[in-house]
Image (cartoon, rainbow, N blue to C red; front, side):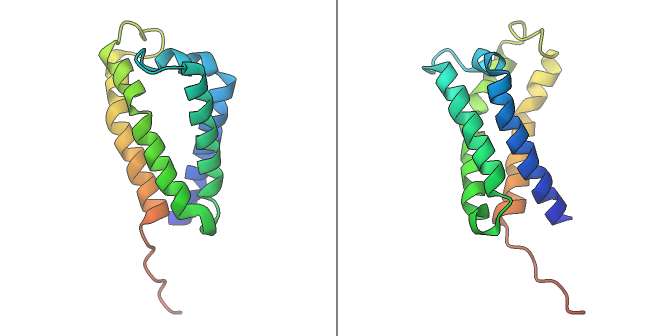
Amino acid sequence: MRHIALVVLGVFFILAGANHFVHDGFYARIVPAWLPAAGWLVAISGACEILGGIGVLWARTRRLAGIGLIALLVAVFPANIEMAQHPLRYADIAAPAILYARLPLQLLLIAWVWWTCLVKAPPRPAD
């Protein structure tokens, strides 16, 4: 079960990161105005998601990639807050309830990364 969750996590972040380059205008739009160079931030966060997604798939880099992805999820949280605080500005994206639901979803993503990458797996029972 944990292995499947790990593979899904890696693929999720690789695809999400690639999406930053395919739909960069969407992501730049949700970067809070107080942050500079929205386009660069979108590209950097997308590249970090791709690298983190690849990194979690190998045991050697899994822990570091997990730490990096958690840091990234915390760093991009202001974009989720931005959307929730200004639901009319993002009405074409989702209903206000969905924009608010993204806030705790970020915590679930952090928990998923933590469980798959940072929590030591229990030993397997002997056959």
